[in-house]
Amino acid sequence: TWTMVNIVEEQVEKIREQIGERGQAICGLSGGVDSAVAAAIVQRAIGDRLTCVYVDHGLMRKGETEQIERDFVASTGADLRVVDAEKQFLDALAGVSDPEEKRKIIGREFIRTFEAAEAEILGDSIAEEGEKVAFLVQGTLYPDVVESGGGAGTSNIKSHHNVGGLPDDLQFELVEPLRTLFKDEVRLVGEQLGLPAEIVWRHPFPGPGLGIRIIGEVTRERLDILREADAIAREELTHAGLDRDIWQFPVVLLADVRSVGVQGDGRTYGHPVVLRPVTSEDAMTADWARLPYDVLERISTRITNEVAEVNRVAVDITSKPPGTIEWE
Ligand code: XMP
Image (cartoon, rainbow, N blue to C red):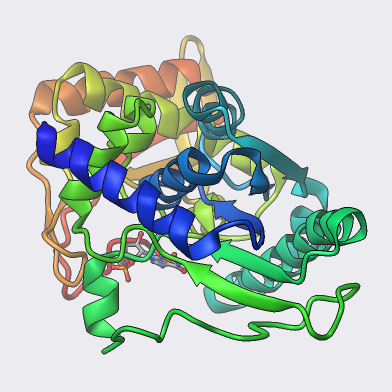
């Protein structure tokens, strides 16, 4: 619609004014809609003076990294650096089952990896052009601004963090093109910018990714099992045309639990997965989603047929409260 065109043009103009010819911008992509739309707008404004950074921590769902690497880049022309940090994250997570411990480790490794990439990118550009201002693009939405009580001027943070290998007087400035928008507007802007539907309409997904959907230790093998089961559940939800009725649809692998089953002539001893479809307005409260039985049946049949290690599929019928949306 014309209003979305206006929003894009207005933001592009604003960003050109803010950044001018002053330096280089960096945007961390999470795989979600906010950072992707923010990056796409800034890319329109300043072209390849924006570098996008995507940290592949190995905890993403099936196909998500490819969506960023291939489809996001194809639709925006953005300059993207993918950091393959899977081994680093999995090594750091080895032997860890406690949910908060997992979150701490993933958060710490993420900042480390992102800052190293940032230092490399800015280090190059400072060496070449003597730039002393760096812009950090963030997908902050209007509700985030209101919640944190932030007004004009709070977006200007000086020396936002110590990034090893950069000059002390380097200044960081935030660029937040979505500061006046609500989520549904961001999605419309994303469509306007031609971003892939999988990114624009993606359900919220936690930063620690599948790391907090494996109950027990996180290993590559367990991640692969969960990725297959999760992909089937999402695919069937999409086929049923129910994506937009559901807030989130976690699939959880009970990796430390084994259950007896029977398949063909043999007894199996596999793992259960739990389907956790919920409806919600804001994730503060949630209701378990009454998915049609035939959709649940297709998901169950396909997962137990196609994922050898899974021999049982359960549905979580707990609301929030008392349950949370995620299991960890
Ligand atoms: P819960 O499980 O607390 O989740 O009902 C509420 C919302 O927050 C998401 N979530 C997270 N997001 N890092 C994130 O970025 C986290 O550690 C995290 N834990 C939960 C969850 O997916 C839901 O949307």
